[in-house]
Picture 1: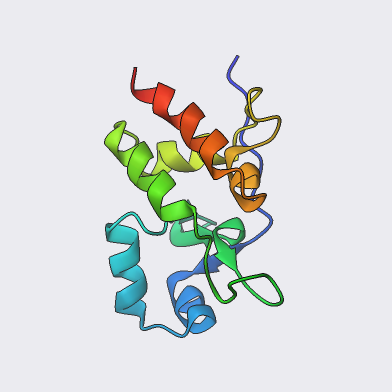
Picture 2: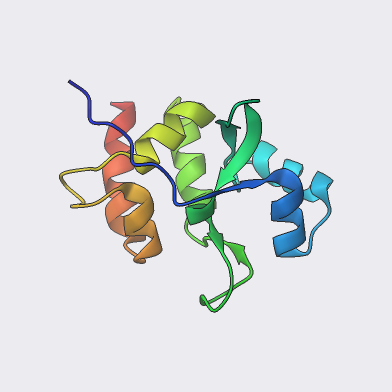
Length: 123
């Protein structure tokens, strides 16, 4: 049986992300298209939503912004054939090698460990 992904701590709509980051909505959509940010359908209407773990807000270092290691990791996953939904599941599913979810490891600045695990996905 495959492990169950952890539920994100919160969700942001595209307009909310734009407001948080001080960007236009079309810039956020370009980030989604270019694998610099990830959104998946969520909620009763299946609205495109960004997990809160992908953004740095408030008193966090480099706030406001996108988690710095996320774009490169998303590109690596896309190059391995992962679509947005598969990337989301992988990032939020506990990984034995990391001892946490990949997204938590990214937030802990363990980028190299996450990408080392991600590199094995295409093989």
